[in-house]
Image (tube, rainbow, N blue to C red; front, side, top):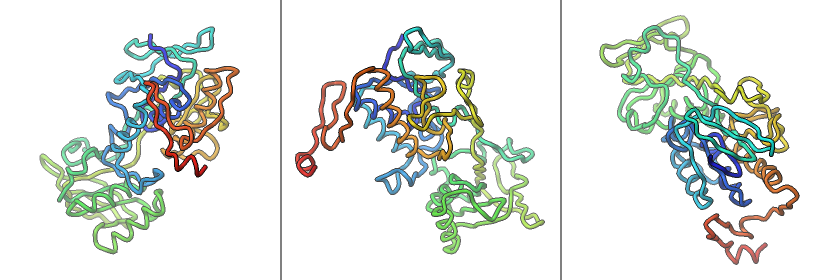
Length: 348
């Protein structure tokens, strides 16, 4: 039996940041993740994808963000159960929970924080006959190593942030980048849309809208695509086709835990992101509430408030006074301490 203060289900960015916030409050964390390594989608699906909305980082690769979060939380000595999926949950008479994985590993904690991102997922594929013939032979649904596309002709299809961001990024290394979307309007960030339009004017991105890919061609590898636009069809030569239509998320076993679910997400109270079951919280992309934004920085905020309520559950009757780390420093579980700079303390 693995015992901890906060059991975190999901080792993506939100789960990893929870380790740090909990550590500041002297609470121990253990994380469960079905993937063989921490980092969630940022590590498994797009480690080389640039992220632009992390405070203090004009641009940071997803994989580097994960490395930084692991380094930040390392001083608080979190535990990990990786390559196993949280399967069942049981509430004990003392109010704590036992979570058992699909491999039978049992974990006991008074607080459970579900930070499972989108849950288990698979990419949404375009309905093109025979597309599976070229999967991993020129057709990819995720980008793990962008260097694969260096000096290649790349066609990206989609209208969201991933399609826009990857078009911008690959325009620096591919010989030709074409972005195809079935509408003239995009769903992504306005800044990214403007950047794509600017790169089109500079001749660094071919933008075809409204249009969609209707067929794929080639022998042993993808060679060309059929594109339909304005009632006409034409062939477009390509070395790689990357349809980025998002992921089809599934909560998996967590959906059977008696939690209140709405549109495949867990409903929470925005006071502290607690679910309808006291002691179980949901933070990050896995939760839903009025005004919810599925952004990593929002998950960080939710994790911070969740830890404050978790402290009260774990330490009933004990009062905690919030102190800024610039004043109090950081105490690790190993007894180490990072002091606040004296100049900062004096200024405060």
